[in-house]
Amino acid sequence: MESLLKSFNLGFLLRSVFSGIFFVVSYYVASNDHADFTQICDKTVLRIVLPVALFAGVTTYGIHRSLLYPLFEFGFDTQCCKNWRKRFSLISDSTIQTLMWRWDQPRKDINQIRINQHMNIWADYIHLQFNSANCIIAGALVARAINRGGHSPYCPLICLTFILYVAALVSNWRHHSLLDYVRPPPTKHSDAA
Image (cartoon, rainbow, N blue to C red; front, side, top):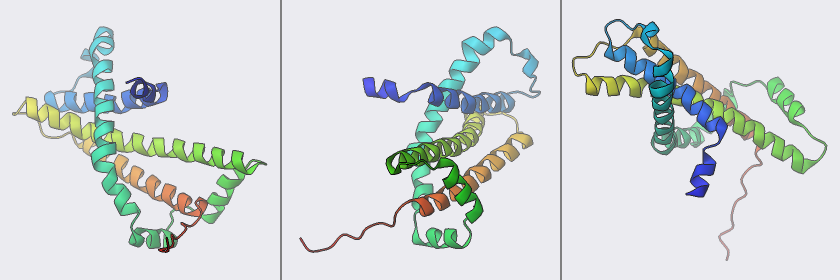
């Protein structure tokens, strides 16, 4: 249990609240004829909106990482995608060289640690985009489930969901292209024992 609590660091919680706000907004819009955000008072924000946003953000992130993202990982790791990334990396060699130069350190072990840190931060932003889009969808679905006579989806939220997914996929593609560059080629295991 202690290790579980340690995994909820401040950065993760802030990212979850940020994504969860999209859940709350989407739910509110799908539940009301006229979304008037001025009705939300300071007390409501602190007592209801932020806790719901945190819960929704963490829950949606867990579902994303355990059920949805493995499908993306599988796709990105296929030989077909690797071949496409060689042709269309969506990140220029110049950008790769600039990133490597920025992250470079005199000692090899520190260099690898810095590259890993930067790649992890990049991955966090990718998952923030995915999670924000998933929270929009989840908020609308929950509102529909609770209020069966609900309203049609709000076009700007649908567009934002689409934009967030496309941005996350492009960023993920670029991230994998950089990983293909940084990672050493896999070693083949011999069948001899």
